[in-house]
Each structure stands twice: as structure tokens, then as C-alpha cells.
Image 1 (tube, rainbow, N blue to C red):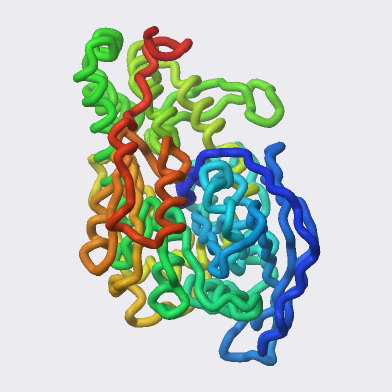
Image 2 (image 1 turned 180 degrees about the horizontal axis):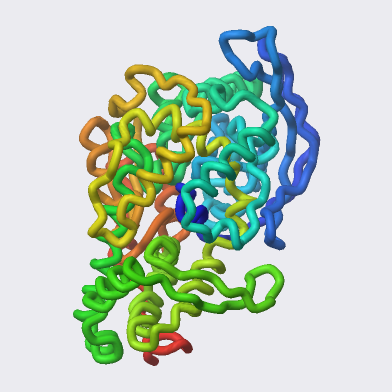
Length: 492
């Protein structure tokens, strides 16, 4: 299945619009001047929008050949909503890999509204994403996306490679961060604050390693340790999180009464679908027409994985798993998966994702994961080998996977039930930082800035740049979403 093979780190939607500001022209720098004009940012397949100031910046595709092919970066500034702005803006590092910062902002703007009161937000679509010479694959039909055929995945990857306009070897994180700093210089900022989520935490750490003097503070939400090849542990961490959720159901009297033995039922479903996939009919998410699909172990794993990203959908899993085990009807699980993944092809530049993965991660992948007993098995490892067997790999520095060592103030945020970047990853990063705090949000999934009071904590930290005085007491009030006991929701 192809949808499951995307290493996509979702954010939760929040709406926030800011007032526009007059056109701004940055001071001329050696790299050229940047002109920003009023614009409207938008999110694919969504009515969410926000006013900003947009511009472009030209860089060499191959940094070693500055006179060679040039590409244009897309960027935006969301002006501070107050009367004046502090001199150190917040640079946003989007997830994915493959997500555009100008789109990711629309998903977190509500949570970061206090940050935006007196600081500009700078959004740079990392090369290969958004409107920065995107390495975007042709849209795949749903029938093909749900195929379990590795040969089909190889063909789709070849089609993507043939369609892109660019040399994929030069779309790595390290080169992308050189672009970020060139934009910073052209805009005239001496120091900046960093906010990154998921893959964006890798990008932010690389920036901090390369340009430490330019960083005032950093917020890393759902942390990817530098030592970790992306995707190598996704199967293990998915099992870790989902069994916590299901055992939580067994400890909850209402949930356990409604769905007894749900852990065993999950294991039974994995085993039965491995032996014999089933046919299920659902409504096509775009056309609304009935659509029949083969639902096997890989598709089931994808359903579970995407539902595990958010505490809200985690609360539905005992119901959906129990229903499927009791009735043999997987239509609701399949429908929820497609709802959760709707728009990913529009939001994620898969070619850029491959450029990052094949250069920075594949060299550290095992030939086989040896994890067939897990819900997701070896799917991620096998798919990465197939895709990177086609995709030209760039270069990652020899010290790329060395941990970030820094005394800069760094706020680390994790969700207790995150299925891809669990709290122990944050602990690994914190061990090498001299001025850090790790806040774990109880009962939450992936990307927690948007949950509860976390946005307020981020705003206070960036305002004061002081971890010692940071008030995180409100986090103790956070908890997992109540389990759905029926399709109408939790028990009143």
C-alpha cells in the first residue's frame, strides 16, 4: 500500500487570520533584496486562509555551482499583530518531510497567536516543497494507492522521478538550512527563534548545528533525534503507543465493559488479515461513489497508524477495532483512514521526502526489519528500500547524525501517546542540551503545540527566553480524550 509508505507527520487544524501590513522591502544583502507584498495564504482542500506578505528568493540548485541552475524559494512574513515587533522573529520549520511552511502555519496559527502578537512569523517553503520548486509526484489514483504491489510502488516512484523539475540530490536538509540562513541574512535579522514540529525538529537541529550564533531560542515539538534514521522505528513505536491506548481502555470500566478483550482482538485482526485479506466497500472520499477495496494487514496497519496521530481519533480505536473483530466489517476503519489521509497528496511533496530519506536515512536502514510480529511489520523498511532503489541519493555530511550539542534555551514538547516521536526521543535530545526543558503532554498524540495550553507555554517561553521561570502547571490538567463507547461519542 502506498499511502502507508509516506512518512507524513500531521498537525491539527486551527484557524487564525492576521491583519495585513504595508509592503516591505528588506535591506539589500549580498544575496540580493527581498520584496514582500500582501498576499493570502491558503491550505489545500480547506477553506482556511490567512493574510501575510509574500516574496521570493533565488538560490543555486547546486550550492557547489553558484553560477549553474537557479531555483526560486517561496516565503512569507506574517507581521506581528501588535503595534511593534521584536527584532527576533520566529522561523517555522514544517514537518513531513515534504510539507510547506506557508501551509503548515495555517494549522498552528491559532495556537501561536500570542507568539505572533509582538513577533513576526517567517515562513520559508523549504526547497522542494510548496512553491519552492516543488518535487511533487503526480497524483495517484486511490485504487493504485491502496495496492500492496511493490512493483507498482517502484513504477510510481519512477514516474515521479521522470515528472519532477530538478535534481533530487540537492534537496536535502543540510542544503535547505543553508537556504534558510541566506533568507535570514537577506531579510536583515541578526538572531531568530525557531519553532519546528516532527521532521521540522530535525531541520531546526541542523540549522542550530550549522548557525548556532543566529539562534536565540528553539521550540521542538514531537522531536526527531539526530541519531535516528526516519522511519526505522515507526513499527515499534506504533505498537508501543497503540497498546497503551488499548490497555487504557481495559483499565476504564465503561470502555472495558463495552469492548472486552480489545488487545487480543487487535492481535487477532493482524493475524487473520495477514492470512486472508477481505473485500470491503466504502464511499469514495472524493466522489462519494461506492468503492470496493482489498483490505489486508498492511491497509489495516495504515488505518491504525493514521488514527493514532491525534488523541481525538485514538479515542475511537477500541470501538473500531472491536467492531471489526466482532462483525468482520472493516468499512468504518477504512473510511476513517481515508478521511484522516485526505489531502496528503496535496500537502506533501513526496519527491522532496524521498530526497531527504534516501540521502539521510537509507544508509542506516537494515536490509530487513525483522519485525514481522508488529502491527505494521517491516512495511516501512521494505518500502524505503524499494523507493530509494529508484531515487537518486544526495549527500549527507559525515556528522549529520551526531546529536545536537547546545547551550541555547530549547523547549522540548512531546505527546505521551505519540506513535512516531514518543517522549523518549525528547529525552535523548535533552541529554545533550545544556539549557532545556522537556514537557510531556498527558494523553496526547503527535504535534502538541495545538493542544490545550501548550501554545501559551510556547508563547511565554519565546517572550522571556527563560526556562527557569516557565509556568507549565496547566499541563497537569491535560488528559486523553474520553473513549468512544458508541458512534455518538463517549458515555455522558
